[in-house]
Length: 433
Ligand code: HEM
Image (tube, rainbow, N blue to C red):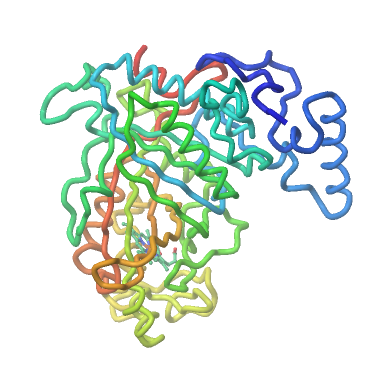
């Protein structure tokens, strides 16, 4: 089945809706199940119903496996963490605001389609031209794909210059992170004018999204670095069982809860106090590629591992407590050491430092210089103010954290994740108004 031809997306120009609103949409899964016609839709609907009958809702049914693209905020922040991540950082090769605008227009149109489980255009069109959509997501469900786009500080100011006439519109808290204690950053894995965080329950769907957006932006953007993540590493909702990171510890026990709107408004979403009105509803994302020195961690006795984190390995309970969600006892001379990770990471200035962590494990094979595993945590955190939240935390951790003996921060980026897209609108629209 040639999806692009059948579902009306072939030949579409960026920003144009492929089908009138209200038309039943063909998803990749529906097309696979029954072709493009009415029969196909009936088969697809029947398949979802049957699966639901047998044992609860079918997670691959289109209504369950798509995350709405439009809203006040972008998806992919408060969305319960999907299993996989592809994070891309890009450089804009132009210094013209109109080019940035065109890029965001194109990315919005394509992200809208892909998050609905649809190709960006013809998968098999004319023999003389490369297909618009690269095709590897054909037959796969939408897999709760979210595409979250951010803009970096150097779009607004580079080398002290107002790079493209947008300096006056810079989100008020967007600035380079600057050197932080313990940094061992690889310039090839650091920075970027734009970022895309694609999360999905299927790695091929997430990769397809970033690959096709890169392709659609050809001539305007180049990829600067990219990171794949697996095993969503941090608990982000109250009903989720806490996952484990590659050190074998539960991660996210005391994370913010994405289903708590009060916490999200207080710590994550940029609110009415933001002077850049266009940026209200956005947030700031900090990404850090944190390598774990796994071999040395694996030679460390259990008692020392638990002392370093400040929690029991299997139970996840804070030292001195019994159960995972017991409140840690941070009293001086208490059971948790002065340099334990959770003591230093716990918010100390009131609770204004709290961040939403949404990290993933990564592996990139072995380090060719040493033969050791290159694996760790691709740390992603969302917040209203990087200086008061991530930077304040990392200044403390980077100096004193007992974990530092076992980790290295090797990559970094900070971006203003754009506000959500209204129906018919495009990402970053307010920036150009
Ligand atoms: C590879 C690096 C890291 C590992 C393995 C790691 C692991 C952990 C673990 C196991 C916990 C306890 C469970 C929990 O409450 O989530 C924790 C808590 C926490 N971590 Fe990390 N972490 C790392 C890096 C960072 C960084 C770079 C930051 C921020 C700059 C950070 C901030 C936090 C915070 C805020 C908490 C919760 C503290 C609390 O309120 O109890 N972590 N981390």
